[in-house]
Amino acid sequence: MIFLVRRKLKTELTILKWGSTKLNIDRILTDKEQEDHLKNLCKQKKIVTFHYPEEPKIEKFDWIESFVMKDPDGRADVNYWIVIDKLEYTGNCPENKKTWLRMTYWRYKTAPIVKISTGKNQGKITNRRWIIAGQTSFSDPMQTFEEFFVQAIKNKEWIRPLFKKIIERCSEELK
Image (cartoon, rainbow, N blue to C red):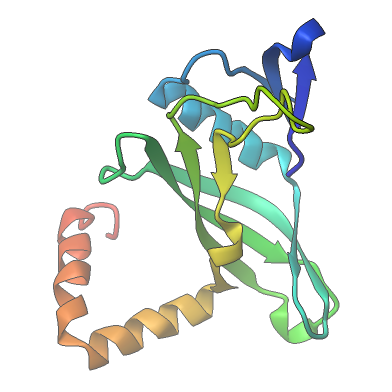
């Protein structure tokens, strides 16, 4: 993501442009505005790339769909948004041509943006409101997620109550 800042004279910060979405950042966005922005952003990103230090250096995926939810246990100065993306592998490795999931999160800083008032960085922003945590995402084919959770349930008793509660709460949807 590239963050571009438009400034009026005297470096007055007015608009943050992110993709083709413009947000007024003179105020803190409401939870609904934050959610809508993330959903729109997810729809704009049709191609997803993963960069690796070893071969293959880059893997490509088509973005299919996202689920976005605000973390109810966020902090007062930061909202965390949990995201699950459904991706279709489009790279050159035939064994990876599957549906993938990516679990990650975004942070939305509700603390005021601070501008540096002196020196060579005068007028620059010291922090930004949106931060993706994609570098710490969990991304794998759906079959890997399935196997991971099956093995966790079979081998770790402490995880079983979580899945029991999920199945109990979603019994109608899972029929």
